[in-house]
Image (cartoon, protein in one colour):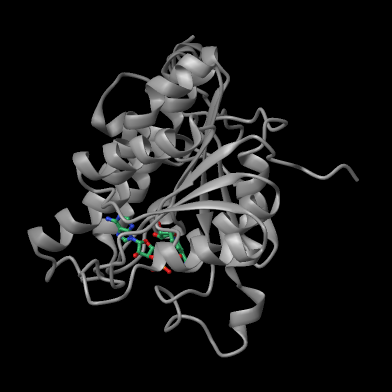
Length: 299
Ligand SMILES: NC(=O)c1ccc[n+]([C@@H]2O[C@H](COP(=O)([O-])OP(=O)(O)OC[C@H]3O[C@@H](n4cnc5c(N)ncnc54)[C@H](O)[C@@H]3O)[C@@H](O)[C@H]2O)c1
């Protein structure tokens, strides 16, 4: 089995001081990538404590294993931070090939209790941070005619979860961003995909039963990141749930629908089961394909 290598490639991994990001950074570095290990050193809720820079300790770990890494402590939720991260990567290594947008925080609150600050903080890191870092590097990727973008969504975003309106909204936003990046990057060999991980980290340690730690280790998610980030992988615009070694494609589909007899609300009531039917479905890859499916359904 030919090994997937990243020799000569440069990867940025955000939020790589802990958990999944650390694991992705180690995986890519072990396969020969030069890795920019970004992490602002936030607590799980996004607050800044007095933790010594976690990015540096992961970069040091990579170097100790014979790899090449640069630590960066920028805040990806700010325009200056995202810009300085990309500048640091280009200054140190002269190019960027892979961007893994992974940084994230949690402020779980029931919707009744959520504050605008809880909303803004989570949207700021997950959605705005993904946008800002990708925008800062996108021109460079286009010029190089190559790029692999791996974004991080979540099962709570894809399927909803009590108490997670802020992160669910952010993570579904990441899906829309990823699909559009895939379309706009296609002419430049830039792919964009999203992963929805399940892993035992400090964000989730209270959720899982004892014993889940090994099964759901971040190391069982990172091989998907390595594959999506590799030049041999041409898949784009897709989303995969991943954890414990299982990987599954998740897609947005449209059912067959129904055409209303007379366009009235009563006709809609009477055809409601058909409107809600799930099969046969189509999976439009862009707005044009959805419109085409819609008009086909009308005829
Ligand atoms: N662990 C899971 O099961 C799970 C499930 C769904 C989604 N996710 C997503 O995976 C990603 C990683 O989560 P994790 O579980 O490894 O969490 P984690 O807390 O272990 O790691 C997240 C890292 O992001 C860093 N970070 C936070 N804000 C930042 C900012 N503004 N700029 C730069 N770095 C910042 C933190 O310092 C931390 O090191 C997140 O996007 C999270 O939403 C994780």
